[in-house]
Length: 248
Image (cartoon, rainbow, N blue to C red; front, side):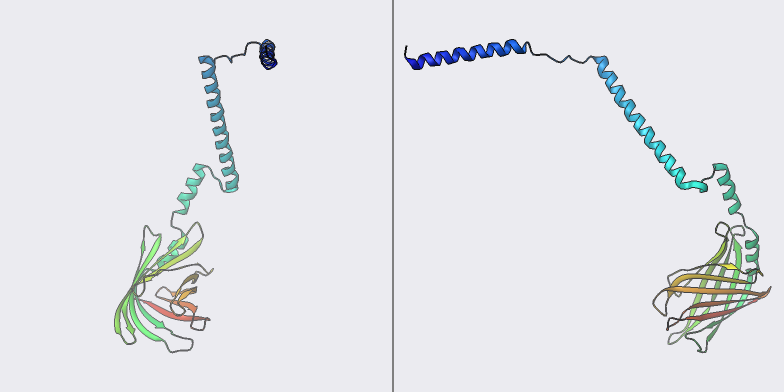
């Protein structure tokens, strides 16, 4: 037999012997056991319980965080309802507003610049409490003399009230000479005669939103005045309007 064939047969014999040794050492390969139905059900239950516990813990953490954020402001439902009922009832300040009720003749003075002679107009006003004595609504009407345009019919409406919760007066004004809304808040003096209000509203002289101020004075049961202030063309605060009310 040629030497090359002998070497090949010898190599094959050695390879077979090596494979036999490896199989003998490793033994029969193990097969993992097939899980039972009970084991699968238990595993699913454990996963569901774990997820439920995680959700409950998350909800408790969120609730605790909300309570901590509320702090002393949190109130039981009964106490909160009592506070709400108290805040919604008209009180002494609303009784004070009733002094503004009635039919009024208005003399309106309009100032275009500091020191200038005012334009004087006559108008009428009707004021009445509304919504169970919570607000007073005033409607004003008359004619405006517009330079170059002559007389134009004017109508405006004011709503004024006192917010029990914030302990301050507020007023709104709208009219047919604009499409905006004027809003101010303020307080009355200890004598119950002068109501001073402030806000930030559109200023047509400066074409921008600026500070505004109104001073309403109850002179007596039949007379009151209203002064309105805002920055003028030079940016300094000036009186733009002065209104004298006389009860009809």
